[in-house]
Length: 507
Image (cartoon, rainbow, N blue to C red; front, top):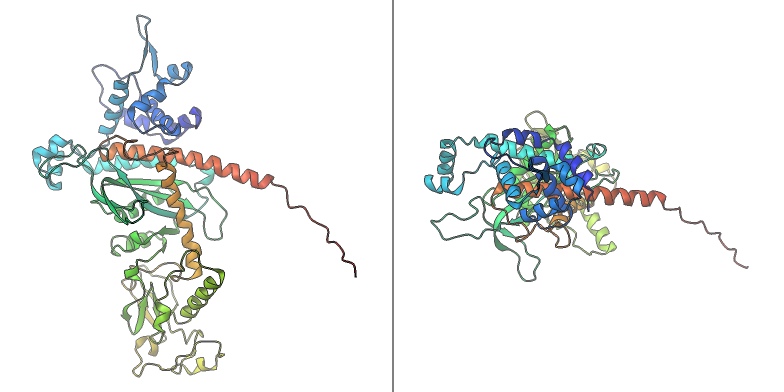
């Protein structure tokens, strides 16, 4: 279990409790529990692998030692001398009042009064003085501060590479018939991939929780896989479209973002939804391509558009239809796959300039760059026969063959363009870092750990679930740092292998 002092330090470093406390209503009977104490209780319950339920938060607080209960306000002495221990209702009151300061969703009665569509919900919110954009920003800032406070200063700039993914987070509520309001009006139907044989996807009712996990840079030193940003939305909101906003908030906090590693769930989206906004932030994509996006996809100025690159018109199509290396491939198969990827790279039009302010760049013919032999470029025919040769050049050479360079607009390969050639060994080695995102979710969803599955978390609404999700990732970060530093210390203390003397053999 994480020490109480570490949890208190995390809450104080986040600095969110005083701001929330100032926004909470006053008057009437004073609250016994402060927001700081409540957050410590939530973190303590999750750190002790208790279910994410307010009853367990109350149990974690009353189980503290006597001096800690008095110091945190869990146990008070009244004027008549009687000792009062905080009750569950006081925990629930503080939690719901805290949530109300950041919940931009109208309560079900308000939404029902104005209709069930989004526009009617916004009208009902405005009628009751709810500033939806401001409350969304307040909630994001609250969760960002909690997660970022769990990252020590020595690791904040340790890497500029991040892996992103989303996972299902089932709501405790069940959907109801059409025309009625569900107990959790923020949730909606979505698809998830179960770990059961014979079933690829299944429906669930709830949210998509998304996390941005820090991974080691290419050829960089190992770093702890720490979650830096989280989000949670109903499946009706595209999680891929929410990732650029998470990156934007991370960059605004002073972090450098160079590589963004994602799977085909992100890359299959329209370029305007995901790829273009991420590149506009100065980041490079390392992603898997959906089968529908692989291989040749049209031409530009005669060059073949395939797998995010432009290739010579005479490239063999078999080289552009290479699939990623299958899991469990032998060393011989990996070597053969790498050889074919290297051969395909010889037909790729080489970059001559970086992207300008509008995203345009120039590329040149591979024969002019000395990567292959082509009769249309007489100088290339003097290259060695170990270079590929174009045996049948185009009868009417296109612009990519007649000009020294061509200008490529950002709309060409906008969806599939990435840092490494797909599916080359360099891409494979870089993309393998993305599994850190999977490990982030397994740590908070495992039944042997925090266990944020349905039933273990019985909160309703996007805001309460996102707050608990952020707290769970913060606790997970503290555990990751402990295990990472313990492994690093063990590796440094490990004695070097003993040198053995070579025995002489009798002749």
